[in-house]
Amino acid sequence: MSGEGKNLFVTGFIDVDLWDKAQWRAVFFGAIEGGPPILGLAYKNKGAAIRIFKGWRERFGQVDEHEELRISIVEGSLPGEKEFSYAVHIGADIENNVAQIEKDGFKADLITNITRIHRMYPTPDSNNLENFKKMYEQAQGYILIPCYIDSNNKIEMLDEYRLLKRKIHFRDIKDIKDDQDPDYMTTQKPPEY
Image (cartoon, rainbow, N blue to C red; front, side, top):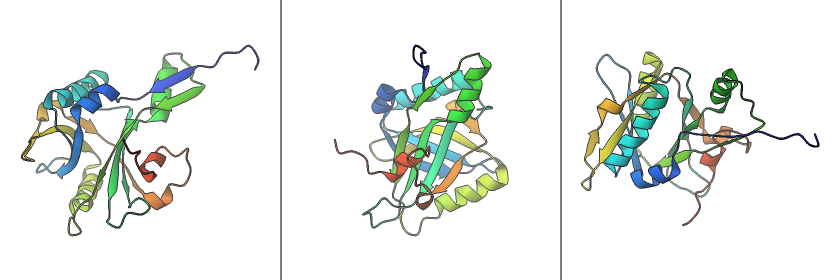
């Protein structure tokens, strides 16, 4: 392959600086009577949260038809943790993104993906995640919505920026063993800053 160039494709829908400004602090689950369940991402900076979802809406429209945005919920605690936790992992769906760029005649030899992870520590009696999973199975979809969380931990849903999704990946941390797995980073302790 001497003399041949490689095409590096950096994909992702995570603007690192914007996400740092937004300060993702929580995940919540909700329901609308007769509609799909809600997966809310709660941020401390309302303006930055709106900009994140506006960017996604500009890219996907109101519905992520090609499932380019990948969301997974990985259940299970990290090594050394005593309490149950789960991670919500957001990034690009590599396969679906490559399919979209190949339609435009681009070939990627090397791909990197920028993602974000938020780990939740629910109370032992919480059944919110289980309820969300059941509602998702019935509806075969969900609404992804930004939320603003104020200094009193009150949540305001920013409904006008919602995004309809059909696919979510429910995983168990014990099933993720390969560092090429798209959710591998959810099995690692975050770096200390």
